[in-house]
Length: 242
Picture 1 (cartoon, rainbow, N blue to C red):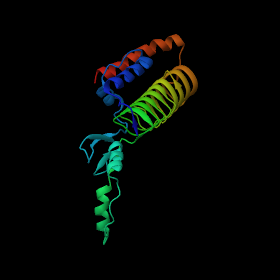
Picture 2 (cartoon, rainbow, N blue to C red):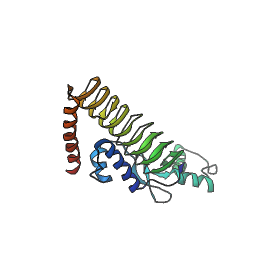
Picture 3 (cartoon, helix red, strand yellow):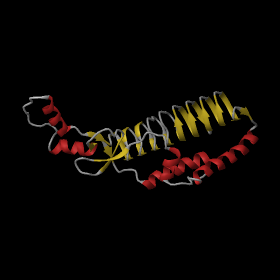
Picture 4 (cartoon, rainbow, N blue to C red):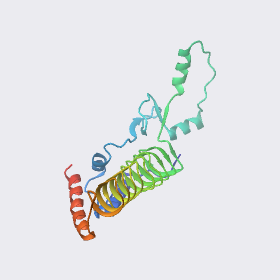
């Protein structure tokens, strides 16, 4: 169940800014909606639905149901009334469907052993989570899906053991990085795909055990850092142009 308060927009923005400072050396140039549009456009996220009992908004990872009830309201209903109903005569399958419909609500905001969770569903042992789903043992996660054992992440999916990273997909053990796909042990890097054990690399694919590489070309540290500064300006400019 949900423990304590819910993460608000200001707290979410603080997490976003901290991640941006760690990766790009400056706060996010856009607000939460800008981050959603620019970074999480392809991430599967919980959607807003209405609780059929109270009419309040709630958040569900599945939107294929006709009726929803939040985890909190489901538990409250069980406490004061209970979900069992008196035995009825069943003469046909239609009778079964009729009575099933009276109790068949899809539970939303399924949050377990977690605190400070907002607009999220299927969250386990987490803290400070904003509009994310299927996360386990994560902290400070925003717009993420299917992540575990990670801290300070934005728009990450199907990844684990990642920290201070944005748009990490199908990867593990990434830190201080932006836009990494199907890779592992990546740090301080941008736009990496199908790679392993890279530090301070950009626009690289299918290589391992390298540092200061750009587009799979080896550079000296000084050359690399000068180009990286220009790439950061370009990335931030992409946000500002939205």
